[in-house]
Length: 285
Image (cartoon, rainbow, N blue to C red; front, side):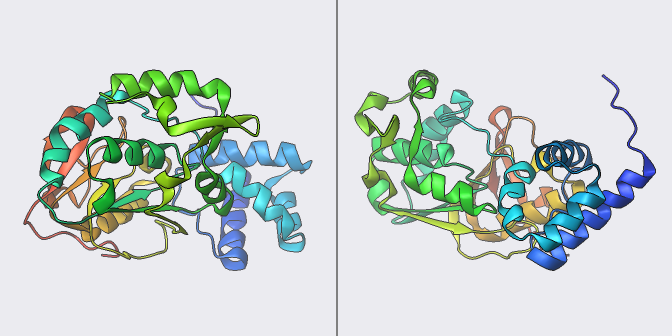
């Protein structure tokens, strides 16, 4: 399907809106993929009753509480536990044996959204006996998403899909061992969060904060333009120890990145890469 051309005046208005958000709220969406971002801003305009992007900008600069709701449109928080089970099976069967060789582990879940991927990894690490030596850094640009991730409560109707994904990923127990039904949802065991740190972090503006053995950032880069993708991949590379692992989403790749020389394919089919000894292009290069 061919997308309709965006009128030039809307491109200008979108540029000005994103610049206003950056200058007033210090959230940088200027490097996000334009097609997807344009559609999301259009939906926000409909929600807030704004006839144009300029009208939305006017309201944002004068009504700060509106920005928190707008973040729900600008960020994508769609995921599921053990999404793409073959990826988690590859981690379990191929990556975990290497992770066992480190006496302590740090895992960075970049763009953790509402927490589905974190709980998937926390359960996997518990089942593989690595939880007690692991710290999980769960980061996202959205404070609301981080709050949901830390709460660990998901709609009950989603649990059957989570359960099937867990089974297909090679789960060694029943997913029901890790949650209870309460508050109208599935509440995941708070002990899974005992070794997790939830923090705001922007791949567009922030820097590396830890040295880690695994970065899992899936279906985040697809919403960035090429320059911001390179910046994010540079951060991942700088954060990883030599021999550390990077997991991306099914539609994401390192192939055309300026950081590609710093990695080797580990499981190309599941988009898992391994940090090698080559020099990396720095994130802000």
